Length: 500
Image: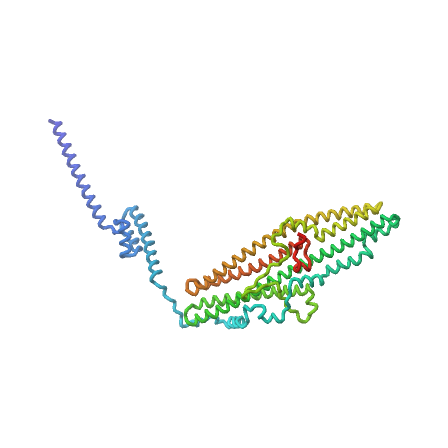
């Protein structure tokens, strides 16, 4: 009976405890639901609903600020921060898209108190532009004032005058005239009277004298070829500078006409003053380049005139030199190819011709003369001649090695110059086509003036590179002909055929 009473009392207590626990959980759940009703919609909604709400009304900054007004859990704050950043990115994208498609920027009106801007408002700039525009630009050489005052000269005349005025050639010729009188090995051997006893010695002395005379003539020929090579380099530099100055003049003519056209468009309100100012800057920059090319051309013309002796013939008035080896087609200059040897020249043929180089022939003749003198000499004199012969053979071998290296280099430069001209021609054609497309695009309003000016500068660079490559190709031919020992004053009239 007592045990049943205790058991019933425990069940009653457990029942009361369970009922109290259930009631407490019910109250807690209702409190949580009430708290959720007080939270902002940015936390309780999904990201899609939140994005729609943010775009519909209220800024992202206000939504983000409302989070800190309510005690919420940390995971809700993180999710709200990520959703707000995503919403800001979408809103910025939509605003940028609407602005680029429909909204035009508000123009900045000038202040009435500020001075009115007009292109070329600086007096010094106006004077400079007026001076530039007053000059005749882009004229072909036959229509310029320089055509009547300058002296036209070709490479053949340069060769003839350079040899005639060369001090090195005259000194070498004087050595030939001086050989029979003194300084020859025959004259030195003649001091030994015993060498005249036998007739064979007399013949050896005469042969040695003849060989030394031939060696002196070969030396003159070597000096002459060196003078021809140096004068051809001066003439090539003159051609290059003259063509660069002409291209700079053409660029000036284009820039002046373009600036005049854009100034008329500015007066009608079609373009802004920025474009006119940019063209004025480009015109002044091109004028500076023209002055640089003109100075280079005048310096090279003066140097070549002094080399050829023209400066001493006309000391009061020195005319500028105009190269004749140029071609003109519709105002576009070109450099014709020099016909000095076949275009399909091989290195084997060049090596065969190089054995006739005058400097190598001079060394061989001197060695043969010393061999004759060694035969008739005796005692210390004979040992002296042997040492001279050995030294001359070493110098010949050293010169032959250097000549072979120079020949290989000249031949490679010749082949490379042919490819360089072809590449430069393709680049010039593409640059010309690109500028034509840019001009159409600029007139239609799709390209800026900066793009047009950059394209014109690229075209000028391509045309200059083409003419420079053509001049360098001709100079490479002259250099190869020199390394083969076949360069002479008549090389332009009689191309090298039979030797090869």
